[in-house]
Image (tube, rainbow, N blue to C red; front, side, top):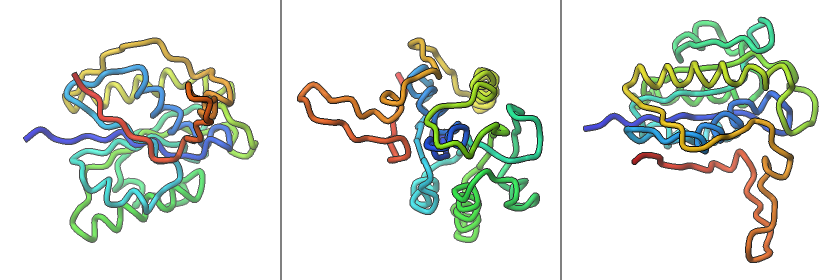
Length: 199
């Protein structure tokens, strides 16, 4: 049976670089077709609400910001076991502390999949600003490449289908533009939007 793979973007887009994982999840979802199919999930700051969902997969790739006391824009690849060993102090916000707790709970239940993190040191997680800082935005292509290489090691082909930019307006990010019926679309990043992609 084909292994199920999830790309899980975490973060709060209301605090600039704190939302880089969510930005990347939506970027990958829009830019690529994955063969075999891969699920891409905007997990926002849901944490424990993701527990049952994560358990459905064989491999989970979590993309997030992480405070590692390194140069902003630095990229780190590590496993769940590393996060536990280092302690929860590596995290950028409360949602990361909770996600490690979620994974630990799944391990105790015997339902923990293979979980790996690809994280970036943020520049600004304090400003109430939707959008990435220039420092982090300039490193998102490098982050994308690391993710593509990791998926490739799992046998996933990432096929570009359209051009996508990280430079998006606030309305694009919040997706609050009126739809064709004139009603406001209130979907906000972090509302657990999911897509199953494949040929």
